[in-house]
Length: 193
Image (cartoon, rainbow, N blue to C red; front, side, top):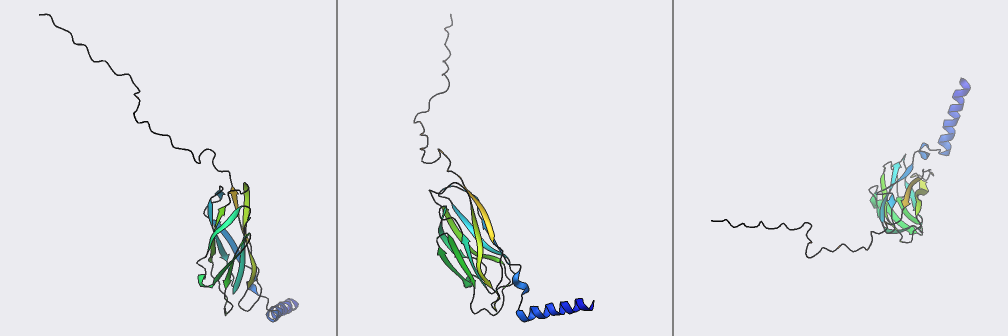
């Protein structure tokens, strides 16, 4: 029993000396979209969410998409610390940096980091595609590196409905055609006097 207590004391001391943080677990990204079934030309609004946050000072994340399927229409900061979000782009990536270099404490809030509006290319390949949110960097305010679980979202691109585009509407007839035969007027009979 005495040796067990000594080992526990040694583990606590080592953890304190080397700064092993309990914050390393429990950070998670998630993606949510307004629709998952798409057609060429459609737009989809995707929210990038921090769904679990054990405490962090800085998070640089990317939302990866297939640039053969989508183009970015717009991006905006979300409700989670919008004054501290920087946005950047590269082919197939929509990036958000959340945090502040002057941060002096960890933030534990969760919420929407950013929103990306994507448009399905007219020549997009049909079938399934996956969006993925992942952390490039994540640190506590005192620069301890943190791990963050990725988020992903499956979307499907289907063919446009055949025969519904550019079809003229049926023209209304100027004079409706009768559907029944007219009835004959009753014949008058002459009375003999």
